Image (cartoon, rainbow, N blue to C red):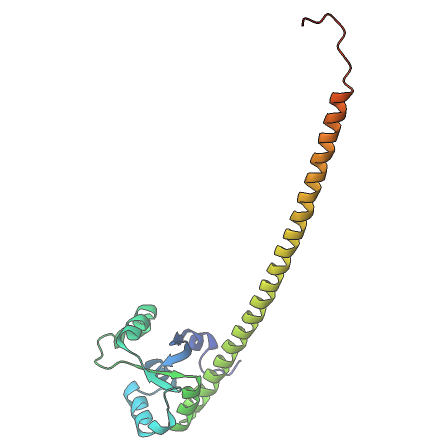
Length: 181
């Protein structure tokens, strides 16, 4: 999109899979919205009823370490006494109602579009995966069928050679000459 505030690729790089859900970390969201992380978290705490556990959760120490390890720009939270919050797609949508600035709304629209794009990509990958699995099964069946036919043909060819060998041995002309018995 020509009028994007932030390129979609940057937003995609800020989406992680934690606890089996695609999420964004509070610090990244605050940066995109142009506010401090503390301000974002205070706004969330003032409206905590809008953020049930399926919309937002706090990372545990292990998850925090993994995120810091994966993403260089989050190294600053390494020594923070508080673990960051992770917002799911629905949590990000809810943030738009909490942070009511023009920039927050515009960024939110982009983030939601990015989540939708990622969901569509996952769906298409699943469809491709299913199609590849079906193709692989068909190929294995074909190979098995072909192998059985091939084995059958090999048996028939071996029988033909055995018959030919037998016929050649039976009608072998006797050698001319003296026999030493």
